[in-house]
Image (cartoon, rainbow, N blue to C red; front, side):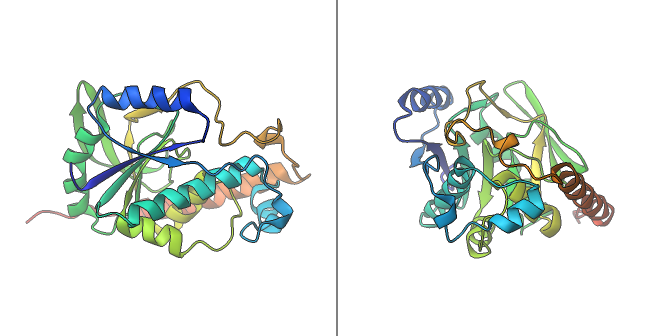
Length: 259
């Protein structure tokens, strides 16, 4: 698929992980461009101009860790690299991605259908491990992996395998002001409200058991990092608002009828 660029985010020095994902993609005869991940593990968060700590604490109920900032910046970086190319779409994989079928073959079949359904689509999550509040659209069988394209009104978490349209990548960069959430949380926040987010279920890409090196942060777990006393309340409010918006969008969503 000449209009599809394939990118792998890989931290400098993580040669074993690069070799592993290279072998997985080679099995499907998929070439890719390596994108050097932004290493956030040693960042001084107090000196970052694009990190809004106070808003992160309000929204997430905790501060972020350097690895989360690095992961977010890595996705900004690969979106910019994609936009500098001639490709129409971008498949972005983190180096722990494990394809269960040929993702390029799947996209060759599904993207023309999605363009008819929603010419303004922005992002597809093809590596999600959960799916809620979605509208089924079309089914595909790729190498024995049967999955369904869905409108993901409650956009799935994880960024191990995502697909950009040029419009989506452009808006991600253009609308970026301050980081106030991990990038997967931000995608849910953004696309649950804006719409034009899609997914496949069951996911055609999963992940290995290897811990993320991009997210590693000075030995401090992201989930327990400087939690505020109101962490649980902030989380419940975030989930409630997102699900409420998603359910409203599902009611309004209409699949175009071909004439």
